Length: 79
Image (cartoon, rainbow, N blue to C red):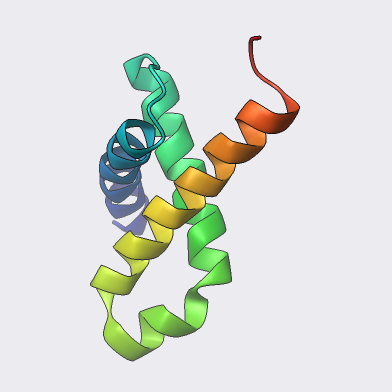
């Protein structure tokens, strides 16, 4: 069940992060960015999840996705 929640939250976070960072990606890439961002954000902001619940996890997922986009733009991706 948590894997499904990770995919749903990651997809939403990826969508918001790609729009906030003004990058055009296809749907699978957007979902992948969001899921990996959710993993990164979840690890970094783990203490907030225990304090304030799922909303902190969503914020962490968006921030993690934005950090992943920044890394992708800076060190990789298409130029």
